[in-house]
Length: 360
Image 1 (cartoon, helix red, strand yellow):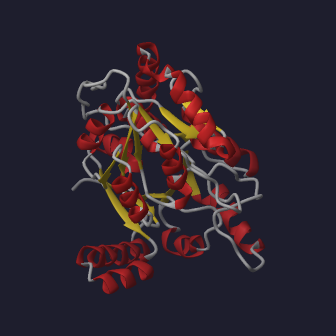
Image 2 (cartoon, rainbow, N blue to C red):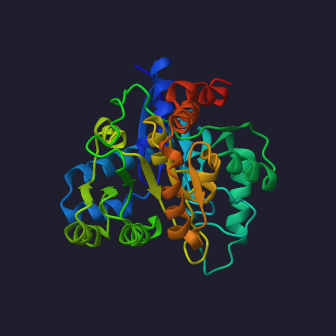
């Protein structure tokens, strides 16, 4: 029977652990994904009559029961800073080998994704103790995350940067440049259709572009789907594709595009910003640079003017129009630099990063 590594999250996001899956395959291990917001998703599964979600929660319950009566299981915990659920997790998992996984970039205490209306001093002490005494290692998605974590907490364990990765076992098709009209520029957006992904700004940009010279492909699903569908009916240059699950199909869509747009916006309280941007590295893999707002995640990936572009969130439309007019991203040298940068995020390269701590 193969040894297992458990990844414990609020909600399983397997695409964040592509390189870890490769590490497991090389070492004859099995990755099992479990979640800790069991009651919430039990309720959702019943309301939606979602049998798959319901049975996943039964697996989660079984995991926590198992944790009480076993020891030294390898468990990687992905939990937002200052989440009170950590109090429960420590009780169940204290006999196991714990590792922490995070993309959060500001551990100074000035802002955390979990807000509280009560005095959280005790919770902060619990978190400090957890990071100092309970974990064998920390995996951070960016250098900024690792530096801030180490600066603000007295960690005795190793910390390694394991960026999100590209499944480079999927070979994208050859890039398709505009065939019927060499002047045509094909734009693409991939992601959730939500307010803080800049969907309204994306559509505003399209209003300001020559519809004969620019096309816009929108890939994704979410609460703003109706707005996007309506825009695709009004403007002939917008193609709403919907949600695409297949990475191969997604890569092929990138290969039909010239540049990607990612207009992420910070929340009003500045608690959320784009912490990485998997779509950026996947587009790079296909030779497609990205114009992204200058958030901590895109800044960790994009070298402005070399393999992509960073724009000010307060001046998205004007700065993006200028970049599109200059067409630097159409140059072969620029495309080559984009694909060169993507190699840093190949899953085959990041496997060793996971092993630096897990093999210790």
